[in-house]
Length: 248
Image (cartoon, rainbow, N blue to C red; front, side):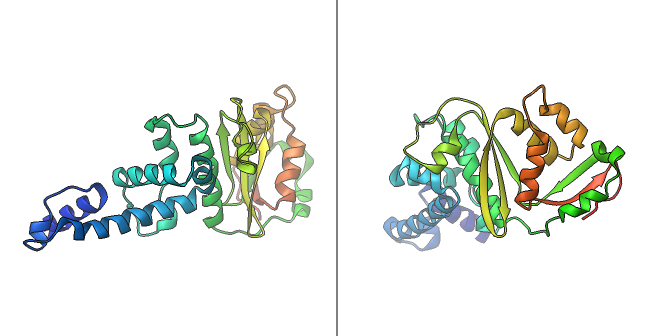
């Protein structure tokens, strides 16, 4: 009985389902419960707004709040850590329609990557001098271990420019955005598709040789520049050779 009442109360808070009033207290006005529902939905929308600040500003407060409440009704929190809530919002926006700008899901993915990078675990950066100990004949087999905050967004719209300036006009063109946390600060950098392919290969633990084949000279990517970028931003925390143990 209690479990049924709890489920009914949760359904009312999230979806506004009627009929729970009498089981809570005979004669309880529905408007009294509305206060609780508004508080819950408003709080979840605020949590999503914190995780997707650029999307919120781009769509406008009212429109974002309306979408966030609908998302929350369909996708209530499943974990007791609200910072992790809302990871499915980009895909939900893609399926929602609602005459949303076509770039909105990609912008949401960038916001989400930066949000996750902020809360990711920490790790000490690798001293670049350690790489000097790698034998020259084994450099091609080197695999990088990147900072836990590193994320890569593969977008079909130029959302990096929009993230920097909401007055920018998004273009329908592929780009990659590399996200990572350096000394406590979350940063992102736009990459062209070949460098995005390089970054994706390195992030997934491919060897330098394999990464170069993914987006190297023929594809237009610059492996050396990518390595320097990762090292300069302190996003490399270790390495491994072939199937050997990680060095850090």
